[in-house]
Image (cartoon, rainbow, N blue to C red; front, side, top):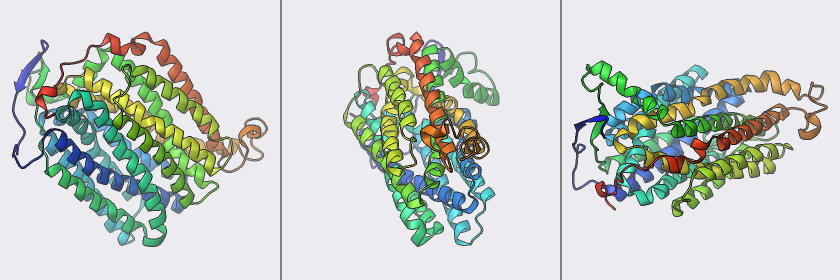
Length: 460
C-alpha cells in the first residue's frame, strides 16, 4: 500500500499445533458464540421484562437499550486500534470473559435482593464497553480464518448464531422467569460465557502485517494512537460509496432501534410475558431461516440491489403488522422483518470485508460500527418518551387522532405505539428511495475494486 508504512509482520502468541487454525478455528469460535449470544439474549430479555413489570414505564425499559449501546459506540474508534494492534484472540477472550464477570455481578445482586435500576444500567454499560471490542475483532478474524469464497457463508453462520439465540432465549426466559426466578435465569449467562471462553482458548488467529498512514507513523505514542483511532473515519469519508452505505444503515438502524424498544410494550399492552416470548421467538425463527439461507448460499453477485429491496420490504411490513392488536399478526410481521435481517447484514458484511484491506479492518470496522449504530441511542432515548407522552395520549379513545388514525389501527392502550411503527415504516421508505437515487451507492460494487484475496494466508 503506497500510503502506508508497514510496522510489523508477526504471528500471534501461542501458535501451538494443539490449537485449531483456519476454518476449524472459525468453527470453534462460532460454536462458543452460539452459547455466549444465547446467554446475552437471555439476560437482555429477562432484565427487560423485570424492569417493565416493576416500573410499567416504557422510558425505563428503553433506557436499558440506551445504556447497552452508547459505551460501545463511544469507545469504537479506540477499540478498533486495539484490535489492529493486539492479538484478535486475546481481544475476544477479554471481551467474552469480561461479559461473564458482569453477568456474575447481576446474579449476585438479584439473588440478594439488591438489584436496582441504576445498577442494571451501570452493568449493562460495562458490558457494552466490552462489546465494542468484539465486533471488529470477530469480523476481521473471519477474514483471516475463512477463504474469500466462503465469506458469505461464514457471515451467514454468525448471523445464524444470533438468530438461534433470538429464538431460544425469549422462550426459555419467558418460561423460567415464573418458575426459577430472575437470579437463576441470569446464572445461565455465566455458564454460557464460560463456554464461549473455552471455544476461544482452543484456537489460534493469525496476525496480519499492520499498517498506518505515512505522516503519522513518526508521531509520539499518544498522538499515534489518536491518529490511528481517527483512521477509520478518514478511510470511509474518502470513499463516498462506503460512506453512503453507512448512512443507509444508520437510518435503517434508527428504525430497528425503535422497533426493538417498542415491540415488547406493544405486545405487553394486550398480552402476557409468555405471549411476548412467543412473538419474539417467532421473529427469531425468521432470522434462523434467513441465516440458514445465507449459510448455504453464496449470495448474489450484486449485493446492493438485494440490500435495498429487503429494506423496502421491511418498511412495508411495519405498516401491515400493527393494523390490529393481535399477537399472530405482530408475530407474522416480526417473522418477515427479521427474516430479511441476516440477508441484509451478510451482504453488507461481505461487501466491507472484500473492499477493505484486512490489516485496516479493525479500525475501519470499528468506526463503521460506531457510525452505523450512532442512531440507536437517539432511537432508544426518543422511543419511550414519545410513546408515553405523545403517541399514546394521541391514540386514546378521546385522543386527537382517535377519529383519523384510530379509525384504521384502533384506539386505546398500545395503539400509540402502533402508530409509531407506521411512522418508522415511512422513514424506511424514504431512506430506501434516497439510497436508490444515489448512483455511487447503487453501483458501489462496480466503482470500488476488491482488495487482494487473503485465501493464501488461511487454511482452506
